[in-house]
Image 1 (cartoon, rainbow, N blue to C red):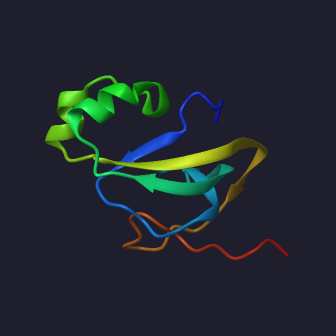
Image 2 (image 1 turned 180 degrees about the horizontal axis):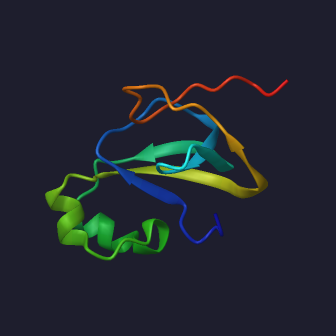
Length: 102
């Protein structure tokens, strides 16, 4: 959430756009938010190498082998001062709908 990494590499594209919560895996906490503005890909090895400053991943061969070929493009990432608890429903893998705080 420092702004150094603006792409999150994924195996599939998404149609979701707009503000999304950023969750630290396995924590049950929303630790920040960012705006998902675009998806690029599928990317080839050359494109992934050229965009390293955007996704910050080192092992390009492993990325290609595991098919992490879509860059989800984020803007305006910010860390919350205090993380927000949420309930992670069984079976949710990529997206979790949360209720607005009262």
